[in-house]
Image 1 (spheres, rainbow over the protein chains, first blue to last red):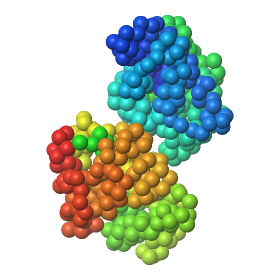
Image 2 (cartoon, rainbow over the protein chains, first blue to last red; image 1 turned 30 degrees about the vertical axis):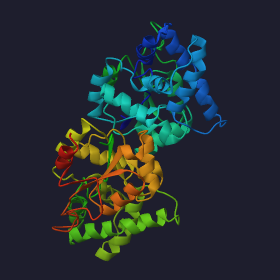
Image 3 (spheres, helix red, strand yellow; image 1 turned 180 degrees about the vertical axis):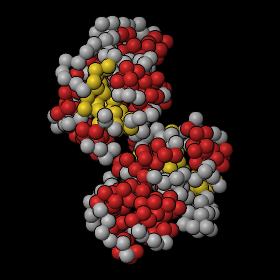
Image 4 (cartoon, one colour; image 1 turned 120 degrees about the vertical axis):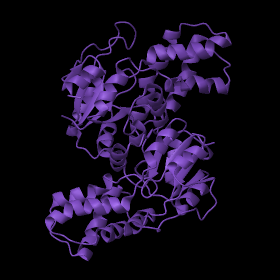
Length: 232
Length: 232
């Protein structure tokens, strides 16, 4: 059994897609904008990997995900014919990523896992973003690990390994938990154990991983199922 | 009012002196050692500032406090005529710093403060040490900030400022809380607000700060008193 569990957050713990659609509508609709809010969420998220790749590849120095989200937002607004937003509106809109809702199994599953394991997010999100999501969704983290501590983005090995080091644990005593097989494949390469959570609706109904596409130590249908399978 | 509270830990939240004495006795007495356990705790703690100073001054690169505690332990053992401890015993003894007890007002005061403020330790202790103390004493941290994130030790400005940055807050929106006027004086120089907690018995009965020796924003007799004074 592992001693610590590290969690991917976007998609694995929180439903970014419907949350971003809701928050964007809440802020932009009163300003007269009428667009496809789910398409807006998908477009914003669509810029996520390319923006991080510029940093992972060494083209740009590390910066927090809040900064990348803001740059990505300004890239997609013209596609939806939105312009002239005030600085205050842009800032509030960007902080929509701090107000995402967790999938319903997360809070009860996490409370069980907390009794037995050290818990931390190992996400590409920055510390203040992680705290915002934890406060909103009762995520009982022992510490906030991940990209801001590592100074790089997953799936670079440094992000997984810096989390193990912060907890003073060997990689084999840590399990990365994610709904994304790619994340787990890279964690496994760094020596961590792996747990997959099915999130069949992450990118819309029926559009998400229902099962891992790589070998994992545990595959679960929810965080409560993971708690059960890990004896918590 | 501040938005986040940053806490010094050793002495301010936990009673390191009687805890280290108790843990050292628990491990060493069964091995036949009979020494003045409180004097042992004082000697171990006495090496704390000199060890950090080698790093603050740039003579040595940063390392975690666990590493310094271990080096300090090996320095003081001969003074107490203790030798020949096994690697396992040395390791368990060093982890005594992860098993310190909080002063009695800490858990109830912290629970109240959590309702209104973001909370983090800004300690010279490393992340795993902070998690150990939090688990033992129910410290509901939002994140573990401080020396390991900053790569340096208090009272260097980087440690205070990196904590503000991690929470995306201006220094003036953050309050450093400590039982040590020196810590607060340096936090204030970096623009943070300051809260003093009286710990009259930190270094033994009647040997601790009963009041701040520098100007502070709030002076409190306990964490519950601080919660009251900060409207929590």
